[in-house]
Length: 81
Image 1 (cartoon, one colour):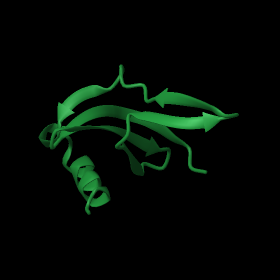
Image 2 (spheres, one colour):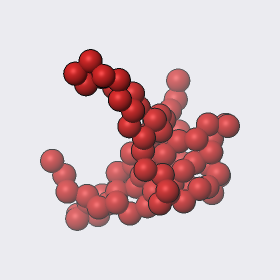
Image 3 (cartoon, rainbow, N blue to C red):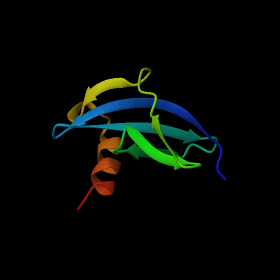
């Protein structure tokens, strides 16, 4: 497992969809971008349906074009269809 610290959290509006983007940096300087397309998750536990929602209150709301270039590049590569 790689130890990395959360550097920045964005709530990004891309083509009318909100996605959560978290930027992590490891102790050796490597950057990792985590992309969450679903902000609300549903799962079943012991026959009961439960919901879990990403915490977005501390995320900076930005348009896709306002993100740093390397973060946009990571999102584009990950979301190509």
